Length: 164
Figure 1 (cartoon, rainbow, N blue to C red):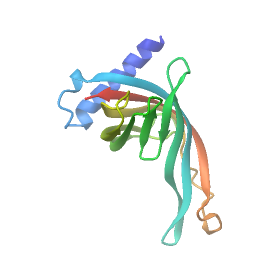
Figure 2 (cartoon, helix red, strand yellow):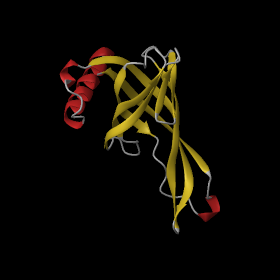
Figure 3 (cartoon, one colour):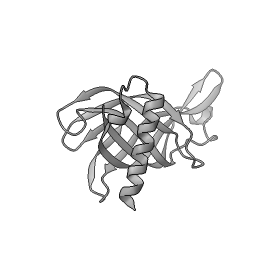
């Protein structure tokens, strides 16, 4: 059941890439590079925009695990993903879609804009964030009395990495 679910997610992600990322010449020929389960927080900062205050995303902070729960990397500001082998990919958002789960951060398709190292993340061309739970900043609690305050909101997501 698990593998069928991941296969379905990968096909959904490939379909999204072919429609959303026209620079991705042959989405049908894309190969899954890695799948990871992210668990962590979305970090928000209370900032002023004119006379209004709102929570703005500062950075994600999450642990990436494989299907067996083994930690395989980290996700952090950039947005960046670093595998345990030291290789890193930095993504650039191409598209965001609302999560079907209320109170969950959007699903994303990102294009790799840079790499570091020569391991698992070195040849990643696209990253898809899907199956999100939580992570949305609250609509209240950010005002002049809380300026520059940080808020850490728990979230989970499935990350699919593709070679281009």
